[in-house]
Amino acid sequence: MLQLCCPWCGVRDESEFRYRGDATVVRPPADAPVEEFAAYVYRRVNPHGWHREWWLHTGGCRMLFQIERHTLTHELRNVTSPGTKTAAADIAAN
Amino acid sequence: MRYSGLRLLYEGLRGHRGWPQAWAKAAPRPGYRVVIVGGGGHGLATAYYLATEHGCTDVAVLERGPIGLGNVGRNTTLIRSNYFHPDNIRFYDFSLQLWERLERELNFNVMVSQRGTLNLFHTEAQRDLFTRRANAMRLLGVDAEAVSRSEVKKLAPLVELDHGRYPVLGGFLQRRGGTVRHDAVAWGYARAAAAAGVDIVEHCEVQGLRCSGGRVTGVETSRGFVGADIVCLAVAGHSSRLAAMAELSLPIETHVLQAFVTESIKPVLDVVVTYGAGHFYVSQSDKGGLVFGGPIDGYNSYGQRGALPVAEEVTAAGLTMMPSLARLRVLRQWGGVMDMTMDGSPIISKTPVTGLLLNGGWCYGGFKAIPAGGWCTAHLIARDTSHPLAAHLDLGRFAAGRTVDERGIGPYPYLH
Image (cartoon, rainbow over all chains, first blue to last red; front, side, top):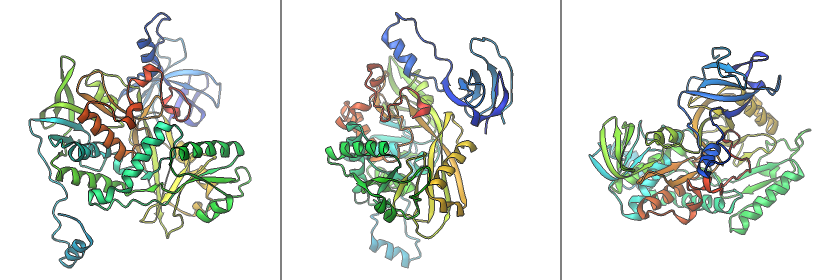
């Protein structure tokens, strides 16, 4: 069981949250070639290590936030609310 | 040595001391025409069909550990072809046809048991969806039938038909579906491929792909460089990591899927049952344990272990479907890593690097597809063109907008 730290509600159990995918993908400009859009929609780095991702606090404030999670150890760090560039908090994995 | 009943009797009388090693432990040679990375079901089947269907025996299968300890030996052993998209029905039914003759072909008892796959439905809308799927299958000559509540009772007496919230209205049955002894599939293909001249190299980890001028020239391994004209990746779960060695990114995320086995009991279930009001499927192994599973854990993971929330969800769904399972204890639980693709369908394809091919993206349905996956990958390697049954599984389908999204979910691997 992961324990995620919601920037608004604090530490809660994984079962309150929904995963919303890779947070590193960036939408290309509207005039970008179709290959760039295909890469944006479909291609992923899928790292064996730290992964910046979106979570939605469905069972709480229903806000989205980003977190870095290690895909092998499930260690967590650097929770940020959307639009924030810097780390808001470091928390340890359960 | 050919296995037979007579040989079993003869060796039995000699105390089983005369059985030779099933396949030769090869050391890697400096170069091959084809190197297959990954000695799982798909890698071994590809090597076997390359040797037997295409006469290409200058082939090595490189496996990081011993044969049979990867996903091929860690799944829930189900085979079926009850899909909806015509391309998928054809591909998976060809696989089922290969399963049906596999034991004779490999001279190996892989314990194919066509005990039937029964999907339950609980609402009229769900019945209509299953009817549509059954009709799609029957139009292509694949067996599928609707069964009534009383037939469900007869097929699987443990199912709670009159559950207050999710009563069972009936089922969708594919009688040719069933189970196969998963370890034996790895051993059978390894033995037959080695006998046909393929080098099966265990404890040989691929650590890099050597490319030159946009074409692959070989692999760097823990046992030295091995040159190759064609390198085929068959490492589902880790496809992204291997592709990254050639600076490719794939439409794949790695996710963990759990499976469970209970203590062994006398026969209570001789059909595979899938619940319709939650994600749960169960069959009884020949040893007597109930083998069951559910959805993926839901977030990218390379950790070969599962978390408790999904274990609880799966168990709850199982107990709603068959309340009497509450009396059983779970003996083992484990997690394996899956290539989850952006449309939930696999990939058998060339890549932008010449000579580098990919067999992967099996999501959590790779086991049933082993014979057809191997067959079509061998065809792609030997003939340099996609097999007609797997032409829709190419990498180009994503950018071209012709994804094969069986459940209509969209590009969200964690939802497939």
